[in-house]
Length: 185
Image (cartoon, rainbow, N blue to C red; front, side):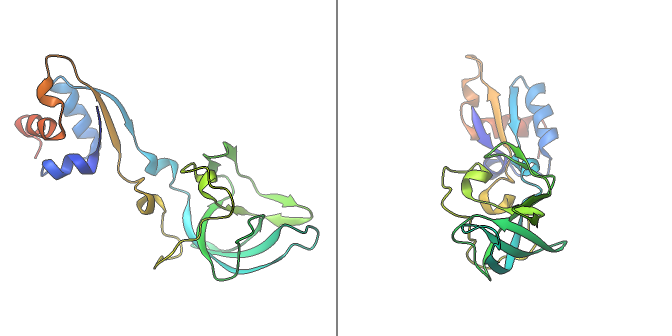
């Protein structure tokens, strides 16, 4: 059975962390099979703003973008057709693992122009197959904010194995009741 930490907290008033919940679940006889916490995987992806986007001097389909990040301005070579000045998007600095393409990003030179990071599409983030352009964030966003909360990646998913004798734990409410009985609260 899978459920999110926030869903569990809808049924259990607690300040306990995910590690304490996991240990308690195991102690009451509910085997924790996996805890998937994507927040760690997406910690380097942040909100950034394209200050200006100009045509690449040596390529027709590339743009050279001056990108404002929390750590200052960086230059990024981008092939997305929708990259434009003033756009708010998602930035990955050099040294970041890109889950959708399984690439470790490194500082490089693309057709004679240095690129120090990447502006990401949904496919590159691994959240869909959409790869027609980079993600354009709408609404109010602060430069440098992590993107995990924007996509719900900050809510760990807990997976437990339920044995046939524990049908009372086939619901999140039943699991919350058992945790409360074990002193979590």
